[in-house]
Structures are given as structure tokens and as C-alpha cells.
Length: 151
Length: 152
Image (cartoon, rainbow over all chains, first blue to last red; front, top):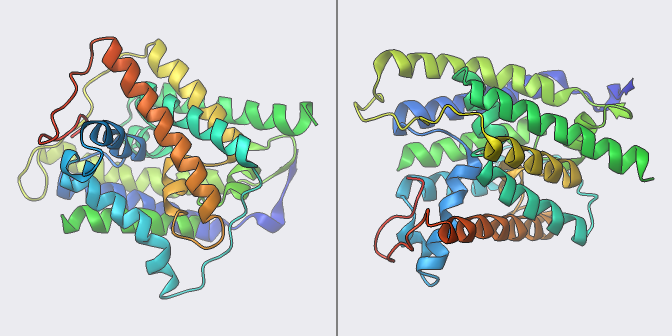
């Protein structure tokens, strides 16, 4: 293992993490809800199924509002500072396979990095600790297999 | 719903500031055998303590700041669904470096928007497959169009 010092940005990582934690506090203390993105997004498929023309009617308003804020974040950010570029190396087939796994897995697992990793850990939930340990291990293993075994 | 809107905005901005919206950085963290990028550790080190304060305050009050109910998960079982689901999620995360939040926060970007869209559509399809499977298991009545769906 070598540490990629050039890509290591400790202060912005900490600051961004604090903002994420703050967002979770806000959603909990104001709306009484867990900021788990997979859960918040999860009611959309059922809403689409029940009313394809107007799925918004089948989703609670707080979920729609949260998702709208999340979607708008890069636009709002860009009003004050230039957006640092992101890099997505995965090709189409990989993106589809990844998306399917994330969609199915987060629903069966009842959470993702925000729901289990941030909120669950903040609650000291043994369930979230277990889930986080497993998806982290799976993430490490998958990258190892793809980058170091298959290539 | 301004609170939820602000929450989503703040969350997304946090993702952008922390760099966790960048699959390359996420995969750099997950690549232990390669050039390892420790950023995600620090993101968690920033997020979890701050969130802990909020959750502790909420637990003490037992209510929101507006006096409303706290909708907290009640399940405590570490079962196969949790473990297998997390395994699948982690594998998908390790494939593309996207989890739900970052993917959504990248949809309206010029760089990566189309790829994020492909991922999100596949993710929604996966979530829909889950709903179908639950429906077949008898766990879901098909909701009528006028009532809110599950998860509220």
C-alpha cells in the first residue's frame, strides 16, 4: 500500500464531512427523519409504479424536498465557487451493473453510507455497525479484485 | 419543507466539499493495495461526531425542535437481508465508486451527468426489483395513487 499524498485533502475532507453530519442533524432535529439517501429515494419506485404520470403524489413532501436540495447542490455550490471536476472511469456496462447492485443491495440492507455509515454510527446502532463493516469490506474486496486480480 | 430542502442542499454541498461525490476519490479510498487515498476516513471523522451530537440531543428531547415525532428505525436484528444486502451494495459501490447520494449530486453536472444518470436509472431499476420481490412475498400491497408510498 502506498499513500496517495497528492490526492489527500484532509481539511476539505473533514469540513465536508462536518457539513454532511450537520445535514443529518438538521433533518433529524427539524423533520425527525434519518438522512439515509437510499431510504429517501426508495419510495420513488413504488410511487412510479402506482402513478407513473405523477409519482410525486405518492412520495412524502419531505423526501421530495430533500432530493431536490441534493440535486440542486452542485448548481448552488457553483454560484460561489468553481466545481472541482469529478472523474467517472466506469463504462456503461459497469455503471449498469453497479447501479443494479446498489439499488437492490441498499434496499435489502436497509441503508447505505449515509443511513448506516453516518446516521447509524451516530446512533451507535449495532445493526448499522454490522452493515457498514460488511459494505466497506465488500467495497475494498471488489476494488482489489477488479484492479489487482483481474487486470 | 424548507428544512428538508436545506438538509438536502447542505448534504450535497458537504459531498462536494469533501470530494466524496468524485468516484475516482472514493475508489482511491477503496484501493488498499494501490495508491491509497485516506480522504473518506476523514470525511467520516468529520461527519459521525457532528451527527452524534444531533442524535444525542434528539434522544434527550425525544421530539424534534418543533415538537414533532422522531422517526427512528426500530429493527435491531442483524439478519441475512441486512448482511447480504450490504454485501451487494458494497460490491456495486466498489465497481463504479458511486453510492446513492453522490450519484444524485452529480446528475445536474456537465461533467459526469450522463454517466451519473445511467447509474441512477440502474439504481432505480434495482430498487424497483426489490419492490417487486417484496410485493410477490406479500409484503407490499400495491399502493393506490393518492396515498403516500412506503418509507415515510
